[in-house]
Length: 210
Image 1 (cartoon, rainbow, N blue to C red):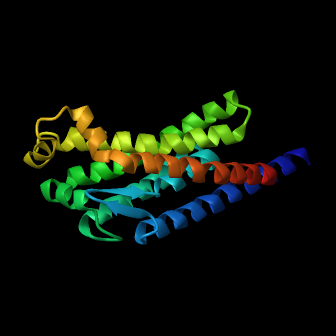
Image 2: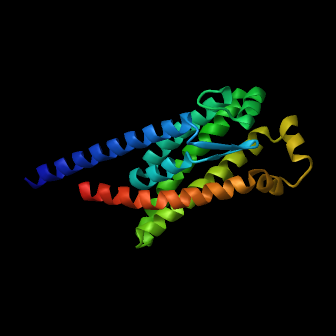
Image 3: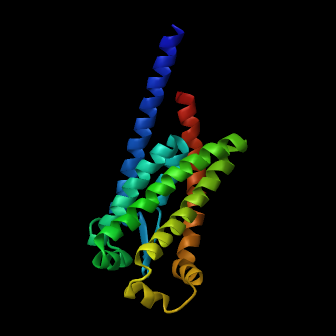
């Protein structure tokens, strides 16, 4: 009898995880294919798409974070060719090297999702207040997304005439800070504020169902 109950609990937990994964996938696609997900400011866009990645990492762990991050990366790449929106920087990168454009858009988002999942597991064991853990993940989601995105941009396109023209002899670190500017700050604030209550609520819901 005890084994049967344990089995049912495991099945129920798997079902809940799949439902949450499907829900976050749908939210990501809606954000990616509508103006809700991006606010274009100059060459860069303020993106809210990193928030479902953060939430997935909290409630579904590294695997869920990686999956939602991968969907984010694919939809971001599609914007380079005008599908689901348009990215000025993405168009330039795609014209230079479409393979590099895919790597630069896809790989960082998967890495962020997986890494956030492991970080949340660590934080949940060290910090008693779940809201603090969720807030940290929300902040790190936007922060790491910016760091990895820009790092891959410089790594893959740093020697191209187009990017060299943008840098124009500046210190690369100062150029990145200037380039991302207020966009990154706004993303971090939005991700922290929105991720915290949703992450706490979904974690409690999943625990209750389990």
